[in-house]
Amino acid sequence: MKTPLVVFVVLLGALALGPSRLATAQHAHPAPAPSALSLGTVDFPNTGADAAQEPFLRGLALLHSYHYDEARAAFQQARTADPAFALAYWLEALTHSQFDWAVEDLPAAHAVLARFAPTPEQRLARAGSDAERALGAAIEAFLADGTPPDRAKHFAQHTRAWADADPSSIEAAAFAARSALYLIFSAPPAERIQRTEEAIALAERVVALNPQHPGGLHYLLHATDSPRYAARGLEAARRYDQVAPALEHALHMPSHIFLQLGLWDGVVASNERAWPASRTSHVQGGHALADLGWHSLEWLLYGYLQQGRYAAAEALLDTARTLLAGVDVDTLAGYPDVRFALESLAFHYGVETGRWHHYPVRDTAAVAARLLAEPSPRARMMAVHAAYHAGMAALLDARDTLRAAVFLHGLQEAAAAVPENDRLRSLLERAAAQLGAYHAWTTGRREAALASLTAVAASLQDAGLTPVGPPRTLPVHEALGAFLLEDGRPQEAVAAYEAALADRPNRSAAWLGLARARRAASDRAGAAAAYARLLANWQQADDGLPALAEARAAAEQPQQP
Image 1 (tube, rainbow, N blue to C red):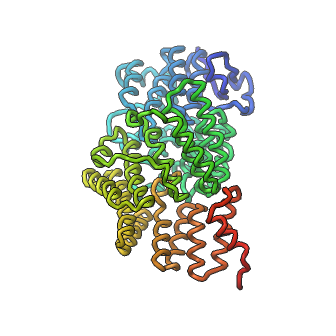
Image 2 (cartoon, helix red, strand yellow):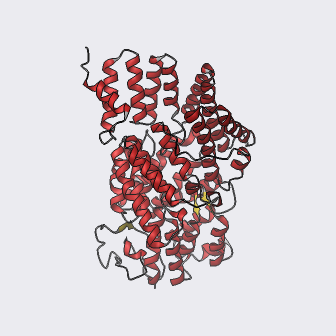
Image 3 (cartoon, rainbow, N blue to C red):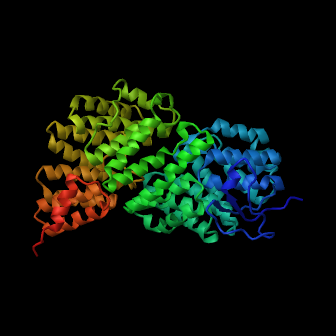
């Protein structure tokens, strides 16, 4: 008779080829406290063979932390150890869907399932327990044919029913929280707040049942990844990288909450651990260049920029350029994070510093056609931003309105070719509107530029969209504030910058703009307060920054009552 394992703490040693130090069933040995090598504590009683337990539970912990390749390998070991273990096949299949990253290989997932049994009915009939059958049914529904929103809905319905039927099951709540996140990503704007609150509640339920559960902490961070909810994720942010410090993604994830709260030291500290961990794993594991933690690198560079550490940010740009030297990134169509890495990094650097010499020259041929030909939703999203970046770099660096117009027209042409209810069209239209506003401003059409940016700001608010991560376009309220200030309307600029700080708390550029707008509006005390907030961000800033000298001079001046 197969004995269910109850609690399992997975250690980094399990990722190596040699012997692992692993906890056994809780009734035999108490689970050890999380160590410096732990991946977290997972809990899924199951009917797999004893030999399958170690790789299965290791894979489960890795899956909850979005380490898909390592999780897939672990589930393959589990099904090799027990070819009748249905859960190992279902979860291996699930690793082929990185749904929230808009990266999926459904044929590969279906091939895994077919290896176990030809039909969903046959596979479900071979489940070893009600819990295993419940998760299997959810995965079958999720990987079935259909649109992504429909598949997400079916996954959520199954996992939520499982969690409701068994309130004591930690994994039921964990997979319900995971699927609730999928509903946020696929929901129309009017439903996102409700979906977000459902996801938060489910993730908090997991953490309450098991404070060391990597999925509970991870999903709570994703669910609270907006200025509106970030405070509810702060405790999880402070714990997740301690619970699963063996994983680069777990080291990075707390910075999602730190960024939303404007805690730049936390953003930097998280990614100063995550990026080197990624490089170490890359070297030791012999992984492809595309598997490096480019996401962590971008966030680290952005954190340095908010701290005024421009030299450190530039060094990261140099590192990326060295890593990609001689690589034809256009051959990496399936890996958009690395394919567009240099452009994203150089855009952030240029926006914050005003220095655009790092921005790579982008081909102006067939912008719309190339954008729409990208192979995945994530790749198309990043291609939209790359076209926007190229147009903005042309305007902000050299006031090259002709070159910028090529990318503007490409975005507009692509938007016209996409159905109205498609999210890609909304993204294209917003990018085109912002780039068009800067183009109008640069060519002297100031009222048109202000009207366009005001409309974009209103549409974002109406849509209920929440910013996630470093901004891939210029923050619209900051841009509006800069235009209004240059147009001699400081009071309106003050309001725009205050709105910018509500959207993206504690951004250094917004504090600098607000200080200048308040000073122009004869609010010396308000300006000094804004400069003081900038100086708090820039405690480690490079010497010689003009804005640093400006802020220090303002802080030293006596303020009249």
